[in-house]
Image 1: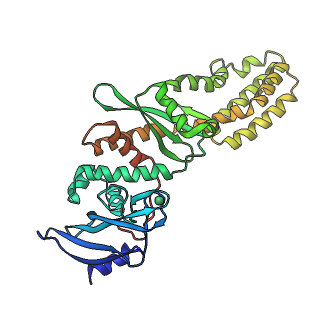
Image 2: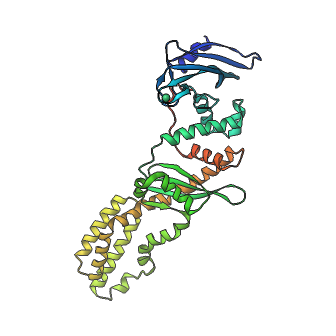
Length: 363
Ligand SMILES: [Zn+2]
């Protein structure tokens, strides 16, 4: 079977033809010549519209996925077009992206392995360089960031991570509701850098966020949410002692004791049902202080039920898990401890970013 036949099966583009494939002079690489299909117009890289040709540039090499230990290169003379809107610009080719020397599919291929192996291991496995692996991850991440959908977001978790010696910290913002993913990487750990996150997602999405889980706030937040529970927990008095008091107090105690159950619910829906029923009973009790409590609970019903959503989020250690993953990622990607590389690696492994569709599964 000819190599050209295989390429036409897995990596075919209507406007272009694989002309021939042969070994390079040193027999270390396979070179595949590509030419435009006759009669097909070049596409302007500025506006993606077919445009009249202008001239040719020198032959350019695009690196493709290596085959059986041989590097594979496409050789192609880029055309320049004379676009009505953009002027004389270089054409856009479907297998390449901008100035990248690697084909898109090879970049996706390397980036795929860069999630499983360290970047160094990927470079060694496929006879390429760490820089090219980094370049590939950058391509995939940028594509993903441009094409991801951000909302809706209702809970976020904020954490910080040291990425280099000498107090170099990052602020990481995770989405921790139905979707668990890294949303944002901020340089430094200042309030300003955190505000950068809200600027990125915009006002509409920001206003939908109900929970912000942040390590420094965690303690006070928990106190606030748990205070009601402590009221009965600490000052518990026994029923036997109570029976000496009047009936109203006993009933109040029973209602109070009953309400303790409320905090044990796991599901916001069941907690809501319980709350409705408890308030109904209490309002019938004719014990004014308890009725006051019931009215207060009814008025803040939404806020109180939020506690259950939060409880689910905060107790499951999602953020600790994500942060551990982030640390492992940084160890795997390092060549240089720069902000850019760290940012790329983190988005790549934790961002759950979309990727360009492929018509053939190369990996
Ligand atoms: Zn154009």
